[in-house]
Length: 247
Figure 1 (cartoon, rainbow, N blue to C red):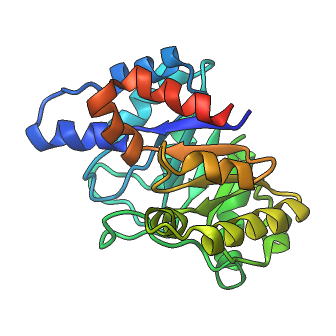
Figure 2: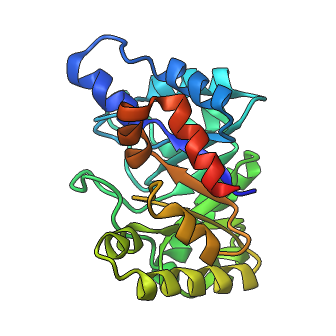
C-alpha cells in the first residue's frame, strides 16, 4: 500500500502564532501514528516560520524505530541563526528520507521542482553525502520533468511529483491533462529506476483519483489539507480516512 506520511508543519504554525508549546507537535505525531500512518514529514525553513530545528530533533528521538521520518527542505539554503541548514540537520538526526526541494523564503509554500539537467551537478555532492548518512533521497520535481536517468546516476532513489497543478485542475473540474502529466512523469521516473512519491494540495477529495492513475505510487506526503480537514473530523479520524482511500 502507498505509505501516508503526515506533514506536521501546520501544527507548528498554529503553535508559533501564540507562542509556547501548544498544540504539541509530538502529541500530534503520536495521534497520527496510533491512527496508522506510516510516516511523519516536516519541512524546516531558515526563517523558522513553522517547524523549527529543535522540533526536528525532538521528533527524531520520538519516531526512531516506529515510523518513517521524512525531512524536506532546500539543501542550498545557508545556515541562519538557530537553523543549521538542511544537511546539518540530516547529519544530526539521520531521518529515513530527505526530500530536497528548491524553495526560498519568498515562497509561501513549495511551488516548483528542480530542473534536473540544470541542477544535477550542484545536487550530486549533497545527494552523495545524504546517502552516506543512510538517508533515502527524494528530489522534488514538476509533472512533465525529464532527465530522471541523471537523478538515478547521482544516487537519488526517489522523486516526489509536485501535485499542486493537479489539485487546482481537479478543483476546477478538469483534471485529465494534469493527471496524465503526473502519470507520464511517474512512468518515466520508474523506468529510470526511481520510486515515485507525490505531494502538495492532495486531499480526501482528489487523492483517490490520483492514486488510481499512478501504479506503484510509493508515498504521499499530506499536510495542509489533512490538518484543515482534521479541524472538523478530528486528527485520528482524518488520518484513517486517508488510509482507507489509499487502500
